[in-house]
Amino acid sequence: METEKPLRVIVSGGGTGGHIFPAVSIANAIMDQHPDAKILFVGALGKMEMQRVPAAGYEIVGLPVRGLARPLWSPKNVGVMIDFMKSRSQVKQIIRDFKPDVVVGVGGYASAPTLNAAYGMGIPCLIQEQNSYAGVTNKSLAKKAQKICVAYSGMERFFPAEKIVMTGNPVRQNLLDNKISKEDARKSFHLDSMKKTVLIVGGSLGARTVNESVLQHLEEIRKSEVQFIWQTGKIYREEIKAALAKVERIDNLYVTDFISDMDAAYAAADLVVSRAGASSISELCLLGKPCILVPSPNVAEDHQTKNALALSTKDAAIFVADRDARSTLVGIVLDTVNDDVKLKSLSENVLKLAFHHSADIIAQEVYKLAKKQ
Image: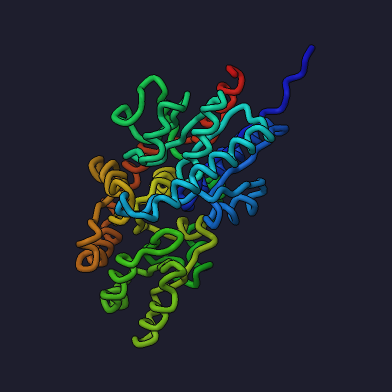
């Protein structure tokens, strides 16, 4: 009897943690289900995936692809298109050498040339769209994909209904395996184990609006009976350090530019303030965390606002517009964290929107495509 040959998969995309975490989770799920599988990542040179993917234990090849300049008629886009054509040519050679059974695109610059080349070479393609409003890259690739894995209902607006599989977004596995208690988690941040705690995060790079919203209301924070874990982001570290040096020490405020132990940070928190990236929202849903979402207005198609509204219209999150955050955010935070009925309601409603085992379901879809091939 002929033995089945090992599954070979290319995973392409990146640019932000929101694309990389799901990509690595999908790869891990494929390896769990098929331990002899071979996986190769294709990313964009100079982007975050070139460090994060090898750190997760996978090989990655970088392409010189980059985003279009604005406005679209800018002369710079001549160079962008030349790099795209170079990338497509390179990826064709990568596909010839690696011989994948399936190519998976998770969004980001590298996805477009990789899936375009794979489609042209007859390799089945699967797209994972994380947001409630599909990105330009994935919309343009939809015709070329056999399966499109999504996290929100109503995605027939962007993709052919017969290709859509509702899977949810894969999240970092360590968040779900967390065993730390709320009390121990608070102690790990040098905070009172019994006090109400708010976690403020602005994504891996930080968020200027969220940071300024905190800086402008330090006295209200100091006087409150609530304690805060505040991740400022590396970009704003020095600026915030200088601002805090001018005021009296605030004992109920733990400030850090980056939280490596996010499972402890989530465990410590009664309420989370976050941007509305798809990965963050998926994590909050799975963990049942009451949250206040402040969508970034500086993203393609304003997709974070659409992500946040998908929760807030179901009373599963509180929505604060970026333009209103500086004046209102801290007040809303203090009112909400002290309202146990509201916290319980937010937690129950956000849990209803959670998808479990997303990476495993996507890995099964990848295998089905390979078997068909």
